[in-house]
Image (cartoon, rainbow, N blue to C red; front, side):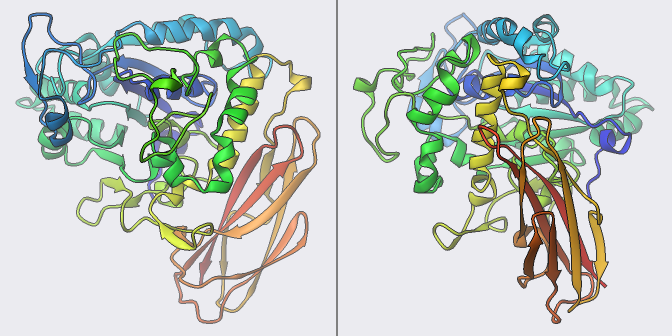
Length: 489
């Protein structure tokens, strides 16, 4: 099991630094993240570049991408779709206006001024540029070297170049000193990179070969249900959760200035600097491989899984990413035990298509995630009494149970709901998260109890993951969980 340092030391809020290239989907991910800023400890917000967005050096220097797709697409450029270095400040300004309402729901939301102080400019001149020592790279370096031992997540929403520069600066400072092994070990134990695809070559060219013991979570398949081609990944019956009626009514409109800045189809907005952001004008949006879109339809939040993984909804995924949760499910690489990734071996059975699906470990959570987002939007404008808040779920019979094959296991759950709403329980086997190949029999005896019958053919050491799911009757209905892991004796 991967047990993170901060969890082991009794500090439940994960530390995190975000690096971002500022694409419109980053903006939308950032807005949602601000509404969950009470759930983790944001310690840095760093502008960076990527294969899709870079500022240029202001000298007319021409650049050709190292990445095959953008090399063919853009050829030679002096700058590329650069959104500037003020958009995070603008969004935090809108957050500041709804902050007095947010703290009615949780006083631990950070102030706007504290967030502003975290904004740094990293390596932005070109894709993959990591030669310059920048304010952002030095900030990350100092965080990795500080006296704390708690895990810090480095979210990569663009390229890894600013993180790579931070690591390179550490290497340059300590490599030929007696302290190097100690520093190297400290950084590798402390940092986890959560990357959405490779958006420059610096991870493969520098980080992977020089920091082999650094933990990496790599999401290349599962994030698509939150990205531009979401209509192909999300089951048709759940499209409504990303379409204009829901997004417009429940999140974007009439929920204050922050969610109003959320980019959606046909909203009339245009990001300065990005000539490919045409989504706000439906007359310019052609029906293509991703389908047709209407006003206020979801565009993309491709980077959101990197912090959805950090929200503690009771699934235990932050202790072990192989468990699966709101940020998807990742498997430890056979070639590199410090790399956790999705792909061919990390598919879940999709009941809508009745096939194994590479995206479904993320897609299966779309409904509760979107309803939760709507509740957070309500927090921007409603007082505590008139908004909904998630229940807290617990399991009286324990989360780790040992039992013999063929035996019956009793589960007793309970819920505390801040709004006194009734909580309805569902019990289901997350088959792909366990090692047992067979389905167990689940008999729900009462709302709060269930009996699990283990097949007699299970082998000693097999694990069965039972998800105890509690959904309240508030509006919007909110869901939290507990995971019971049964180990066969």
